[in-house]
Each structure stands twice: as C-alpha cells, then as structure tokens.
Image 1 (cartoon, rainbow, N blue to C red):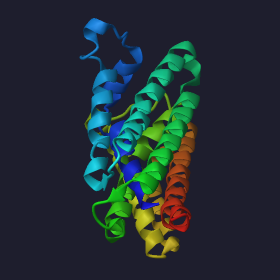
Image 2: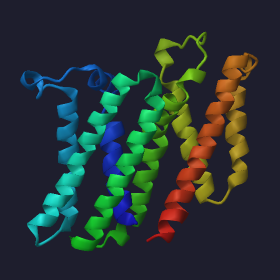
Image 3: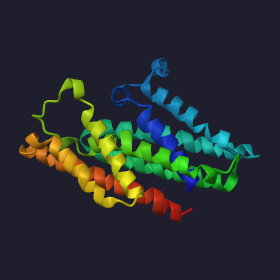
Image 4: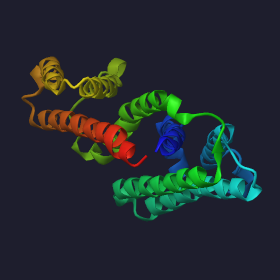
Length: 247
C-alpha cells in the first residue's frame, strides 16, 4: 500500500499543512461570488490541491488520456467534499466535529480510489519499494505533528480549561510538546522499548505538577496524554502492520 501512503502524504500537506487556522476560518465564513472567486480561500485551496496532486504524474504514467482524466476527476472531488462540509457547517454549526470526521472519512475513500486506480492503470517511473523507509518516515512525521494537533483541538476543544490563561510568548508550547511526545512514543515503539513510555509521562507530569491539582486542567492534561499515546499506537500499527499486510 505504498501508493496509498504516498497519496495520503499529499492529502495531509493540502488539508493540514498548507492551510492556516485563519484561512480555514475564512473559508468557512466567506460568501463566494463570481467576481471574487479567484481571491477566495476556497479557490486558493483548490489550486493548491490540483498543483500538489499533479505531482502524481511525475511518479506514475499511462498511455491513455482517459486514465489521467479519471484521476483528475477524483482529485477535483476533494473540493466538492470541502464545499459540502462548509455548507453543512453553516446549516448545522453545532455539529462541526461530526462534519470534520465525515469530511476526512470521505477524503480517505477518495484517496483509496485514487491509489487503487493508479495501481491498476498506471506504471511507476521508478521502484517505490526502494523508498518505503522515506515514505513511512515522512508520513509518520506528518501524522504525528500538526495533523494530530488539529484533530485533538477539533475533537476535544470543549474540554480545554476556560480559566487557563496562556502565556502569549509560549502559546504554541503545548502543541510542540505534544508533537515531541508522539514522536518519542513512535521512536520507542519502533525500537521495541514500550516501557520507556513511562519516562515521557513522568517528565510531563513533573513539568505541570503545580497545575495538576486544578480539576479542569488535570483532566485536560490526562486527556491529552492518553490521546497522544492512543493516537501514536494507532498510527504505528496502521503504518507498520495493517497497511503493510495489505500490500
């Protein structure tokens, strides 16, 4: 399933790394008119999507133009899904978490269809297996860093302590700590040293010891730690066991 992993890397770049929180918010709130279409965030997102996914054709090739056309149709369906998500978010603003999950689920289906169609109708310009380590490493880093932070903030935003005033100079420290925590967990899992996970939890607890007595913060801290551990375990087994067995 190296093709699927490669396509998933492109999707993560488009949906999570080449979009800022501000651009996502603007995309959900803007009213798109023909006169302002080119300057809209949705159009910019569409262009980035097309450009990045066009890199596929540097790796895969076919002698039939219809195959390229079908792949582009699948790629363009990404923006259709995004437009439907925006419409649902406006109609049902209290269900944004569900919209996010459904949106990503449909994207995964499209990614699977693209990778499956490529594997049947296209040939590769070089041996992907030789780059499996690089693909797995890149995908792991992308999944465990900003992607994971966005998922956590989207699904568990209501658990964040309202009285927890962040230091403006270190407002991104929590996200960075979470990223490093997940990367360390992944590293320990790959090395087969799962017992070292206790060291990570102990280090985090020591740094936040004075605030753990606060009920809201303590619960949020435990939730974040458990999320990081569970999320990393899912990524580890998905990349190195489940998808590998489907190859």
